[in-house]
Length: 292
Image 1: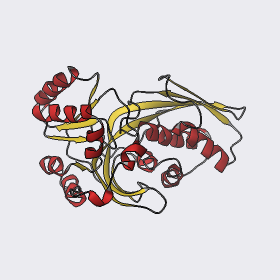
Image 2: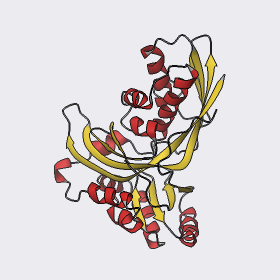
Image 3: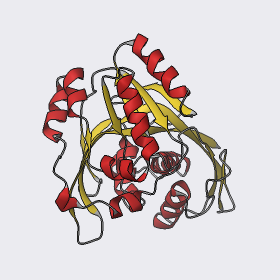
């Protein structure tokens, strides 16, 4: 028996850090939405109880360092499953890009194994399990658009944002999320994004207000560490993007555009500068999909 699950990327429309927590994590407030750039996770039942993993990207780890592998081990041990699984990840989302590719693979694994191993867990139970793997996993279990609080595990579902094009550009570097947070001085943040204003923009499907409300307090940290990220952001703005922001801890930058003619102009400008450029749409309120 084999199941395929889509694992869509996410972007941060806002990312605010409120405080350092006693547990070492940061207290965050983020508005996130999924886009239609996705990995595919194939899960094939193994009767010998083993968990194995292959990936189309050779540099992705195939052991407990991989979030999807970790998800399978956690589920198998927690629910004392005798069967095993062979996982194959068809990687389309860039690695270490601020797009939650690894977290989305883990979320897809949880959803798929729930079906493959016939565990009967609810989506909320899967999200709670996901929080043990990584801060972005609960959001990725649900997909769609949501406000995430706490360390990312407290999810409030939102409506669908105004429809638009999303242009993603990733420079040829990886960014370590712990390094970025390690260089963040929370008490020195003076310009916090207005989460409330972004929620209004989404509720009213107000594209202009959504673009005005974009904000990410990690952006300045990553821009100071990696000048290429700043260059991509400036190029997008100069090419006429309606709104531009770095996603997560970076280094991927995204542009929001309503008019298709602008999409081609921005895409062509970026392609002369970086290799990894994607034109996608927001998925809105769609849950992660188990294909069959």
